[in-house]
Length: 112
Length: 113
Image (cartoon, rainbow over all chains, first blue to last red):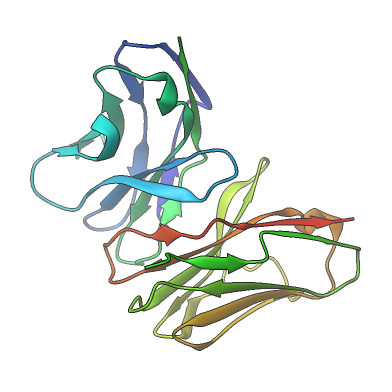
């Protein structure tokens, strides 16, 4: 069975500082990895994905994620956080089963 | 494209009543997913269709829940009878091909009193 762990329920960071939201995964075979963001009362929106190729993936709104196969991690990063980045972030994995399994989510709060 | 369309946006009903949630996926997408989101359990996959055929319904909580996809442009999730513990936000999502991103609808906020 495939699974995703987001060890932090809440991440607080000051505006302008770098941010990291952590994610580790477990899946059979090569993983398809995704990050999604959810704003209040909205559906999830796609940020970025890793399928193959460069371990550093760049996505929407200045976000990037680093795939680390040995650590089975796919942490989300941004060099300089904005207050408007405050939202709920979900990591997800898809393997041979093809359905997407989501982590429990991390609430990011960027403080002005 | 209008994206994934879900209706209704909000549904308030009484325990024991039948509830039907509706979803129109993005045209051309051949996979459709129903998820449920609660504070306690996070985002749970309920059922997944590929080419209108249910592939994995292991996430459907119990027999009170059923889902159909009669054609490529429409799916329903039905709860009969509904219970207060079914209160949640139900999301529908669609995808073109395996490995590609999911597009989510705005969700249906269900409250069962």
